[in-house]
Length: 370
Image (cartoon, rainbow, N blue to C red; front, side, top):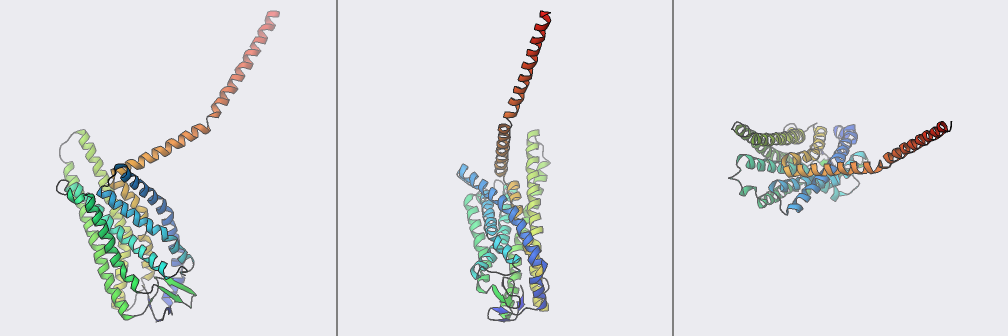
């Protein structure tokens, strides 16, 4: 966040703020990252959401894992649906032409995508922990009703944390650049600045640090339980099945922890450092870095389909079935398109054999006449 002197809804920028708003980082790098996220994330999440819905329709019930994954896919799709507005904003030189309500909506969806994803990934981690480490004692905690209640609480908590954004003006006119910014420039008001400095610290602890700690604990416990279980004696089929479970549990652990470390940790840590520098030193030059980390946090929309694949055996089966159907369809269409070629070759061969036989007959007639 940037603090600048204001007059009503217009501001005069300092040199650092001007350099960020007019630099290549915000006008070229950020839209390029968001375009890649849109091109990769939209088709994969639409496909994942469609397969998850098909699974629920087919079985007329939903497991706790599927409920969490459905919510995660819904968050991603909501964000991706309005991402073109964010791309247009940066490509226009950080000029927002879509009005104040849409600015608030896009900003809220940006935070919803990042932090609802953190909570739903944590829910999936706890669900896997209960399934692997406490399979019998935790049957009630893994029911569909529990998953629905946990998902509803997640939405409410994140919306409450995002609610302060609706009490300040996010769009600011910048006459010296001829642009209107969205969530880039704030008026320099002591009460607002002080509130957001405290808010960022609480936000970091509650919405990132606690879920991250829970997730790390869950996967360490899962890996420990699977390693201890693998040391027991069992048949070849049991050993093969256990190895299969361990492999997918390890893959899920790597994907989720990589998502936290790559996407969520930099954004939240830089935001915390940015707010603390404002409190201690009265200013910060980390805003450009924060905007870059915020863009990278949206990469979770590309990683989430990998989570679905590793977390759900049913999702893997449906994906493989869809790919087999696609491959069979391609092979069938290819065989139809090439069906005429062998027949022509056979016809040509038959014609050549007919010519050869007729020539043999002619020569035999000639010889006999001699």
